[in-house]
Image (cartoon, rainbow, N blue to C red; front, top):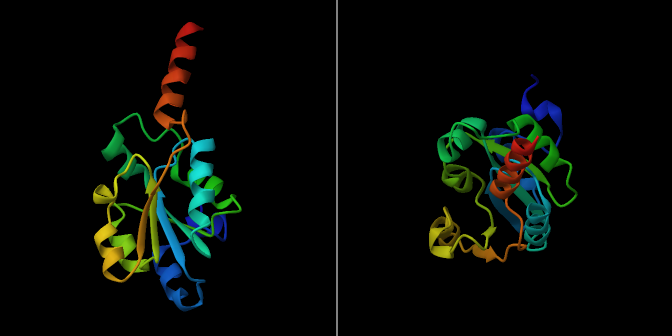
Length: 164
């Protein structure tokens, strides 16, 4: 498999992204997640996040990170495919994969002006919120589009498969 950076120009290593830090438009918006099965709720959140600045950077959990967080049956979709689909969205400017369970080190490295998570995260639980606030950034928890969940999609697929 090719290195992620060769799959799509928006998919970057942290090192490559930071080398070009001075030329990145500001305000820079950051969000993160697994994005295991991309659905309308994800796209809705990402489009709203992008409206908060001039550049949207996605921190994308690695496969190993998702397995540690969600169990051995996840991810459903491998990292390369998840990154490629996210990079294909017009509202996304950069995708950076991370191996850790949280994006804290990634947030510290890129120092976004705006940190965004979905409404299932309260501001006091958003990883990196204190750090972003410490350099004068803003933190938002945006309302989710009701009725969309990767877990619910996986469960529905399993129920349908059991009927066959």
